[in-house]
Image (cartoon, rainbow, N blue to C red; front, side, top):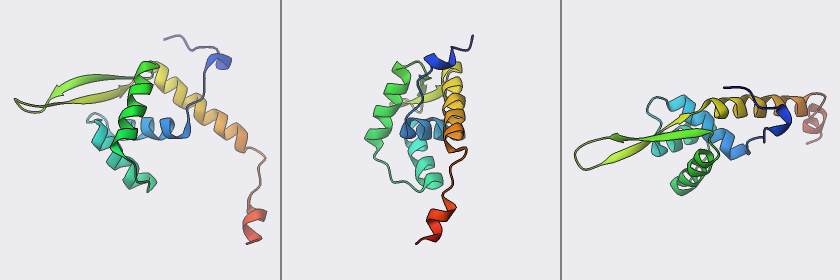
Length: 114
């Protein structure tokens, strides 16, 4: 995939970024509940499963992730998610933008004021 122009890439929102990172951490078994559990475990963040589904659907509509149905047993299946090349690019650009924003920011002195 040809990398889009940096100016054309819209940075991910914080929660979108966290969901995509949790998706990558749980691969190849990246279904919604596994992503939710990973966020709760690693980020220490309690998340409603509905917000995970809404975010996954939004990321898929943007072309940043894909989903396929995986058969669990005869009567049920689950959606397994994967990051697309465009999604990987959006993640790296979002991380780079955040690092540029942090460059030169000093918060230690503010922490000592407490």
